[in-house]
Amino acid sequence: APVVAVVGRPNVGKSTLVNRLIGRRQAVVEDTPGVTRDRIAYDAIWNGRRFTVVDTGGWEPDAEGRAAAIAAQAEVAISTADVIILVIDAQVGATDADEAAVRILHRTRKPVILVANKVDDTRAESDAAVLWSLGLGEPYPVSALHGRGSGDLLDIIQDRLPELPSADGDIESGPRRVALVGRPNVGKSSLLNRLAGEDRVVVDSVAGTTVDPVDSLIELDDEDWRFVDTAGLRKRVKQASGTEFYASLRTQAAVEAAEVAVVLLDAAEPISEQDQRVLSQVVEAGRALVIAFNKWDLVDDDRRHYLTREIERELRRITWAPRVNVSALTGRAVAKLAPALRTALAGWEQRIPTGELNQWISGLIQARPHPIRGGKAPKVLFMTQAGIRPPKFVLFTSGQLDPQYIRFIERRLREDFGFTGSPISITVKARE
Ligand code: GDP
Image (tube, rainbow, N blue to C red):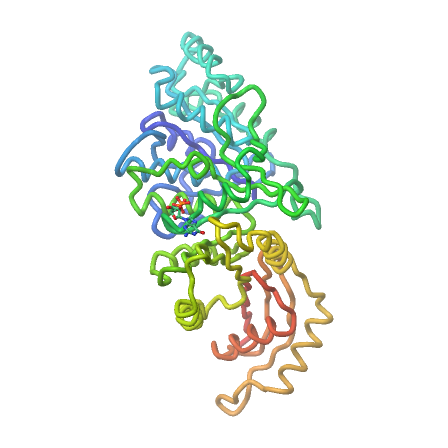
């Protein structure tokens, strides 16, 4: 379902508005681990159209400390939303924090609905009208508390929701979206600048605004790629106040906004826990993955030998990810990045016809049957690929399969069909 994110400063009435939009308090439909309190999703329906409303904590883009972490949550919500509702307290008017929020929203290129809340009667409507000056278009006056204007707002939301995807239409058009992520100092800025050739970056900004673009459009191998959320990288601004938690939320936002992630590792340093966390973020988000070892100019024979062992040990779970060894400093092998991205995206979108899949699984089971338990072995009745981006498989069986056997199937699926660069999942539906 399309996602509507509700953002705004603390106490402007976001949660009250969300309650209005969903009709009543509903069960939480999404609980993002670790971020539960600051980002909650609800199911909503209006005129038969379903959508998800995401309630966020207070958004103060320039905040520090705990408030910064909450703000980052709002930014994650924005990056994954189809429509954004910015709520402003019309009784207070637009504050500096609101204006900072507007600047960020200008860059998203997503539909933004400006809501002037706490307009409790007709007299207060002029408070809403002054918000035209924010440049986000018409401010919609509502009173979330009393319900005033909420029906109109729902109509407006509905108008802005994306078209329903066609049956086969889950491929979006436009340049592929890439997240360039990795722990601090692995060379993200250096690589981005190397790829872009600095002045060759075609910046992508909304017409009529002069704000910094969030994304960089870079041409590699005769193809445009959209590197998402690179504003900080390009300016070489290091988040001075960047706690690791905050940095990890930024990574999450970039990964969620992307189709494929390049996780940059420092080839001259041991693979760290922080590297592993970034890799897990990509896998858990279900995005395609390319691993790039940077600073290859510093790798001598000794280090290379040790690194091979380290990769075997530390990257065992993700041997399917294409690896490239690059140097942002010398430009070594950076031309290999685009082919690796294409490979990973192809694996991420690979689909195997049901007939072929069933032929394959029955051959596999004949060659290596499931171990017998309690006198008989569970049978696989049917296998189908339920989705792509990333590939998802469903096995219908006559009993639970051993986890080991599921891993065996996954391994063979990769050996026989590839799925290079993509996480895949297998779900078992057992008829007991
Ligand atoms: P970021 O924090 O990931 O954006 O990392 P930076 O791009 O700021 O790079 C961190 C440091 O590593 C800087 O001192 C860079 O000059 C250096 N660096 C980046 N790439 C390379 C490389 O390929 N080789 C070497 N030797 N140093 C590099």
